[in-house]
Image 1 (cartoon, rainbow, N blue to C red):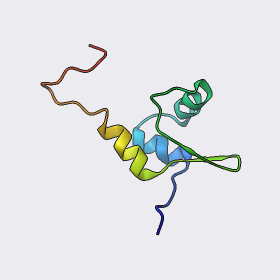
Image 2: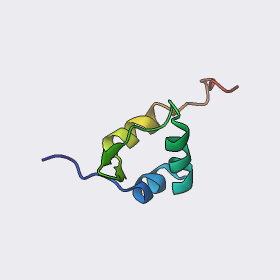
Image 3: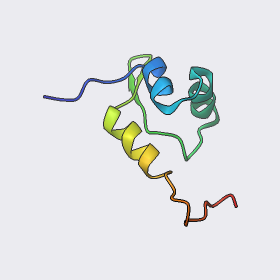
Image 4: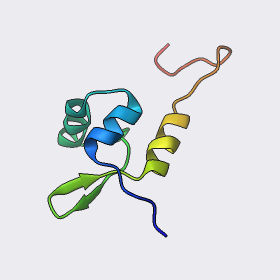
Length: 68
């Protein structure tokens, strides 16, 4: 069975950001945003993509983040 798709509100909550931020990333066509799916005019996110996107941005205390 396919995974249940998340709404923008649900994805934003899972990421701990405002829905407006996600919308802005889509509008700006940022390359580092989570992948999304268009279902007609609706935007949806796969939970597995959100989880992977977060884990790819996780750092331990002995790792240096790119922005430092």
